[in-house]
Amino acid sequence: MIIRALSRLAAALALLFGMTPAQAVDSVFIQSQLDYNAILISGVDIVFIYDEQILAQFPDNKSAWYSAKGQFIEQAGEQADVVSIFIPQGFDSEMASLPERRDQALKVFIYGQHDASDASPVDVTTMDDVLVQIDQFGILVSSRN
Image (tube, rainbow, N blue to C red; front, side, top):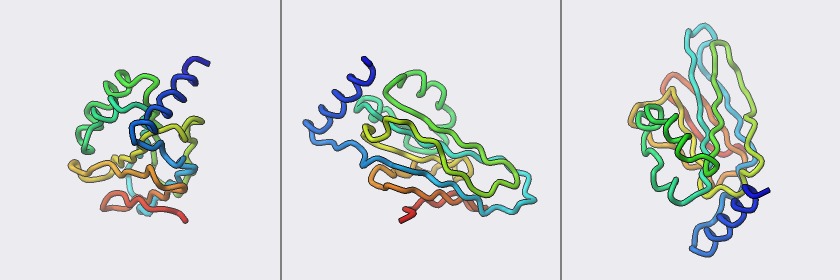
């Protein structure tokens, strides 16, 4: 109850200070285009940020994210949600389960483990339905609409 009230207060303050919460990322569909015989496990992290201070500390590339992910999650506490999807060999597609409070997020980012080490997170804050495609070169993120 208290956490929900604080989340609503944070969203109201964000609006007051000119930031708008996410337009509610409603779905993230992940599709692999890798060879079914490839011996590879890849991952996709969908990160929901609910607090401006946490947003300011958010890692700006894949290498920084994956090397400090645990520390970031611990420090962020209730001010961020991370949905991690692991894609094993032979994976085709999956619809990610997203947090209930996703519509209160200030920003929503996606990192792909199977991407270049200096790759920036993809900001999907303004997308309703997101498509993440994984191929041998990395990830491609677009709208499903």
